[in-house]
Structure formats: C-alpha cells, structure tokens
Image 1 (cartoon, rainbow, N blue to C red):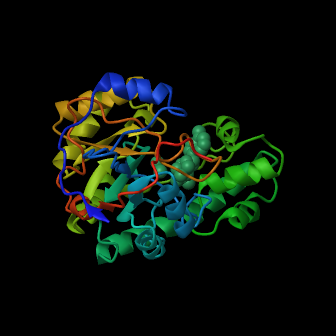
Image 2 (image 1 turned 60 degrees about the horizontal axis):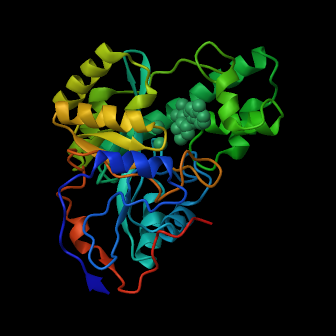
Image 3 (image 1 turned 45 degrees about the vertical axis):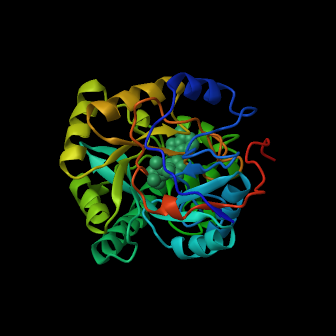
Length: 334
Ligand code: AMP
Ligand code: MN
Ligand code: MN
Ligand code: MN
C-alpha cells in the first residue's frame, strides 16, 4: 500500500463536468480526484442510502458495491437514522475504504420539505439521537395518514404493504414499492406522478424537524451540514436565496452541487450559488440501490470550476491509501 498525502483544494473545469456527465456511462468519472499520481484515483461519494432507510442494499452490501465502483471515500446518509453506520464502517475497513458517518435529515421550512445531509457527524451525540428518534416516530403517524388517504382513493392494504417493504424507517419509497407491486404503476418514479405528492392520493402533510434544530444537531455533534439536492425543491429564486441566507446564518456549510438528480445546468447554477454565498460544494450520487438510482456510484462528474469542495480540509483524506496495483475504477460498471 502506498500513502498518498497530497490534497488538492481546487475544483475542476466546468466544461469537463458537462462532458463527463453527458457521457458518463463510457468515460471515466474523475470527480473527487484529489491527486493523480501514476493513475492513483480517489472517487468520492457523499450521499447514499441503505436498507436502514429506503435503499435496497444493506449497509455492508452498499459499501461493497461502492468499493467495486472505485469509490474510496463514501458517506452513508440514511434518512433520519444512523443505525447502519457501524455495519458500514466494518465493511469499509474490510475494503480499505474510508466511511464518513452521515445522515439525511428531513426538515420543514416554510411548509416545504427540505433534506439536510450531515457529514462527519457524531452518531452518538444525544440531541441528534433523540431528534432523529422523534422524526422516526413521526414517520409512523404520517404513514397511517398516507394509508388512509390511499384507502379513500380505493387503494387497499397499503399500510401493511409498505411496512412489508421497510427494513428500517417507513417512507414514501416503501409505499411506492407497494403500489408497484399492487399494479398501480410500472415503476416507482411513475408512482410519484400519480400518488404520494401534494394534491394526489397518499399525500399527507407532515411537519418534520425545523431547520435550526437539524443544523444544531449536526454542527454541535461536530459535523458539517449540507443542503441536499437544492434543485429538487421548486422554491423559486427569491425563496432559494432566502433559504441559502438562513442556512448559512444557522451554521450550514455546503450545498450539494453535483448530485444524481441535478442536470448539468443545475451543476453550474448551484456551483455559482455556492460561490456567491461562500458555501462549500458537495458531491454525491444519492444512490438507493441497483435499478433504484439516478446514476451509478462512481460516475458523477467533477465539481464545477471555482467551487470549494466540502472535503477540502478533511483529515480523512490524508489517511486514504491506494494499492499500487489497484484496479482502475474506470472500467464500465457491471
Ligand atoms: P419520504 O422521506 O418518506 O418523504 O420519502 C422521500 C423519498 O422518496 C426520497 O428520498 C426518494 O428516495 C423517494 N422519492 C421522492 N420523489 C421521488 C420520485 N419522483 N421518484 C422516485 N423516488 C422519489
Ligand atoms: Mn430516499
Ligand atoms: Mn433527499
Ligand atoms: Mn438521499
């Protein structure tokens, strides 16, 4: 094993980002490439889900899959739960990968749901543990409301059906899987067009954590707070600017600029906003398992030019080692 210590604080060329995104199945994804000496490559993925929330791989399977895709620094960020982190860390140790303890917290801001990713959190920090337990308890109540709404639209058995798919928390994803199983749609993405969203059967308004609470739990536990996939909130320009102002004032550190659900235009748009608000930039696939993802792990493009990576000063990077004969992560995924 050979130690690679050098870090780059620079982001990468934006035209390259776009080119790699549009051709991501065949071209090398060089994101998270911190330092490239004689073909040593580091791939970073700071947003992923296991069966503890709504992913389809167990934490150990997820880590194994990430390793096979060439990822060296992985954050497990299950929705509102940290129960997968121990198993993921053990698996990461076996694969010579570094695991970042993370979480994705559901927040209500101006009656809209936002997701805040916490990275490098202390998962034992009591206010975080208690806050997440409270959110999970709320999920059970919400699930009953969702099932009642579906029932009123003629969909029977959704509460039991959704819970059958849930190995950890209960979420809309599990309802979506039940609706596919029951023949209401051919895949979960189609479910979210006809069900489970505002104005459709199965929608149930719910109050999650407040933004200041979630940011407090993350930052006081020693973690950094990242606004997840900002392109998915449909806030409008004015509210997005207000949100970024408030997020930063409350201790938020970064925006997820490159993520599976953003378009190449959104990489640029949110890269620019990150710079404008002096926020760092994060990068993660939001992987939920094979066939349940926007993009394969290890296939995201680089951060746009001029962004400061959220991992810029992380000590974990100094500990990463690569075997001199490591297989290249660049071969097409299987
Ligand atoms: P919940 O936290 O229970 O509201 O569930 C949110 C989850 O549903 C997200 O994390 C996604 O995994 C999934 N989801 C939301 N919208 C969609 C969509 N349009 N297509 C597929 N999955 C979605
Ligand atoms: Mn999810
Ligand atoms: Mn999310
Ligand atoms: Mn996510």
